[in-house]
Image (tube, rainbow, N blue to C red):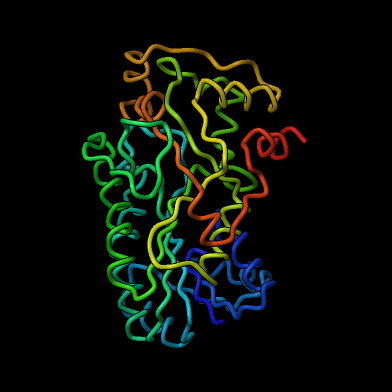
Length: 308
């Protein structure tokens, strides 16, 4: 198939594009930087320099590629060390998830591209009820104010892609880790700058970055339209996974901090993720996409990433 991938040089794209090429697909891959053209060619794809917010340029690029599938992985995240104001950190990404999504969907319609696979996130789920959520569970009706625009942008993708594309698929990824995906988090753990806040009762779902790329490649080829959780098979509370990551990284155990102090130092969003987050079930993706994570648990994945 002909596949048009945006965000090809991002954390996920750099693993996804070579996988699609190896599977025999004809891949056109975008980058915003002319300096990354050679890197895209080395992946085996045809590079196109395009700004996802330039609607005319997106139309021209997609029409020229005439893809069977479009994969939307556009983000603009360079520094994730502080999430005190999530909406500030994600400002450009939020526009890419709204206006950028609209531009790609319009181009898909013009090019008669039926299948459209887009990046979502598991942060959408309500922070109450059971510890593990399926795709049918409610989304969070009361996002933290400092992250409200970011959550709205994620929700926009969630709602718009399945409604607007004949075969619209949204992948609600868990937290990425692995090569090129989460070095800032690892650095913070090693410097003891990532404490367990308020008991660490928030449940996180992780997905190793090459496993995320494998799930995305599977969604290119199969699966009914709709949303899919993409995480490993071992959702776990912060109080469990964070000390383990410190251990395999050769760092001292993380500090512990009460929630009130966490709010002062890190902000409300970080505190809610540390204390109220919910994990995700990957059953639907495993069954309907035929995908199995290589790292079924972050325990094996973390050790392979930093402890091997």
